[in-house]
Length: 358
Image 1 (cartoon, rainbow, N blue to C red):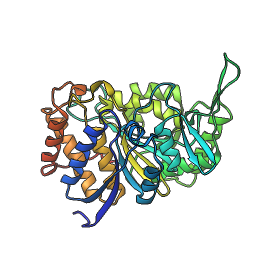
Image 2: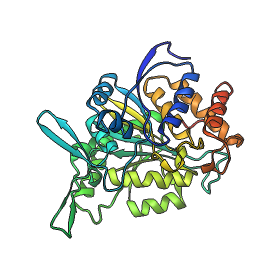
Image 3: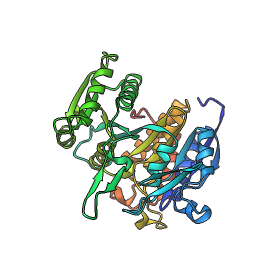
């Protein structure tokens, strides 16, 4: 049963295939019967063209006020994506629009549930992991400088406060959803101080959650386990850079990045996005896989307290994939974005008992 409430949700269509898959996600969320008042705001290249900046202050202010957003993918140009956000008389430089959005909105946990689906070819049909990625620190935040013309440095910053916060979030997530265990990924054998502090923080937090098993694994060995024994893993807690890389690895094991949803959670703001990029090479062809953003929308509904609607979307997606008649080219099919969207909406009324919601 839906709550009967009307929710206000910010909508950022995104770049590239963003408008195509955002439209699909909105259609599916509305088909659940949950009442949503969408408020559209610009970010990325569309914002740059219309407002002269890829991340307008008005967009940031609106998302902070509304508190929840659905976001399409944004372009991340190689080596040229840096942007400046002005705060009064001070400028803050970020390496990309996505990075700026996360840090300006003060989210700290990037949650990416990735599972295999019957009907999607994979050597690991039992894959079911959740990547919990810390997104405020590590080398990924882009603190770099040139030390002369032929030497570049990047700063890897890890703090106990941020590390304990992400582990606490992961343990609470695992406990609330009945997940089997929490695993910390690290390279503390070499990065003794930074990854060592991350791991020590995880061990300290684990003491407060004795009912949730905890272990750790070096990041290279963790990659091996993912491609050899993924069923031995469940909730993976990772520093920023490792988490971004492992998401793509897990999505590849599951069958496609087009199946990997994501959420960015903070104390006051949460926004939901697919794990993949803007795919400019297929813009306008109508073949983009909308499922990752549709499932991100399902996670948004769960965040709003609409657990039944969230579950129905996961079940409908699972049914469509299992039946195999509406698969986009990335999954080996010939369906168009609109075909997949219509099939999922049709399946909402007949979804059955498929677990796997985030």
